[in-house]
Image 1 (tube, rainbow, N blue to C red):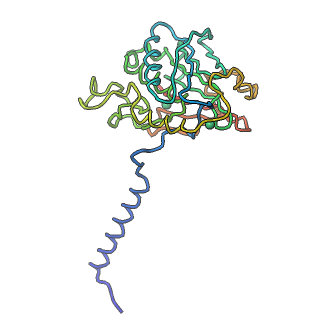
Image 2 (cartoon, protein in one colour):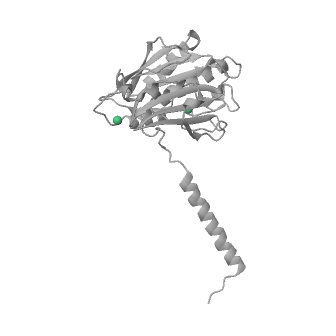
Image 3 (cartoon, helix red, strand yellow):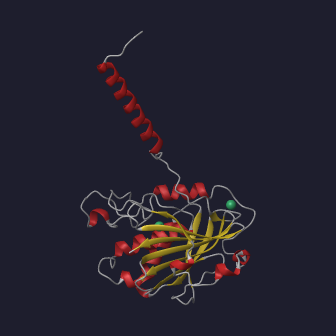
Length: 278
Ligand SMILES: [Zn+2]
Ligand SMILES: [Zn+2]
C-alpha cells in the first residue's frame, strides 16, 4: 500500500485547487463575442433594412442628441431610424403601435434618469418608449453632452432589442453606449486618457443587430398601426412612469444603477422596463 507523504498530499491538494479555480474561470468567462441581444426580442419585419420611426417629443435641448442617436443606430446595416414629428403629452409619453416615442420632461425626483419601455407580443416588439428625466439632467452631474448621449443612445438601443454589453460602472469603457459607466466621455474627462467614450454604439452592437435580425418574419410589427392591438387594455393604461406599474424586478446591475423590470400579462404579452437610476 502506498502511503502519501504530507508533502505529496499537499501537492495534490494544490493541483486540484488550481484545476478547480481554472475550471471556474473558464465557466464564468464570457466568450469574446458574447450574446448581448436581449432574450431575442425583435421587431417583426419581412425584409431588411427596415425603417423604425422615432417619435420626436423632445424639447430643443434634446433635439441634437436624438438626432445623433438616430444617426448612430442608422449606421446599422439591418435597420434605419428616422426622427418623425410627434404630438405626445411629454409627461405621460404614451406609446404608439409600431414605433418608438421619445420624450423628455421633468418627471420628478423619482430616482430614474432614463427609461426604455418595450411592449412584447411573443418574440416580437410591438411598440416602445424612451424617456429622459430632466429633473436630473438639469443638475450639474448629468447636465453634460456625454451623459445625454449615453442615456439617449442606450435607451433607444434597448428598443431595438439590445442588452447591455457591460454593467459595471467603474471599469474601463468599452466604447459603446450599451456599456454603463460613471465616466461617459472616457478619456476626454476621465481618469484614463485612453478610455474610449461610451456615447455611441460600437461595432459589437452593429454585429449583434445583424445577428438579431438575420432571419425574416412573415409578419410586420415595425410601422404597424395595429401591432399593439393584441396587447391587453391594461398594457396601454396606467402611469408607466411609476415603478408601481413596472411589475417584477428581474435584474439589477452590481452597483444597483441599472434595473430591468418585467410586467407579464400572460399569453406572451409583456412590458419590459429598462432603468438607469440617477
Ligand atoms: Zn422574428
Ligand atoms: Zn440600459
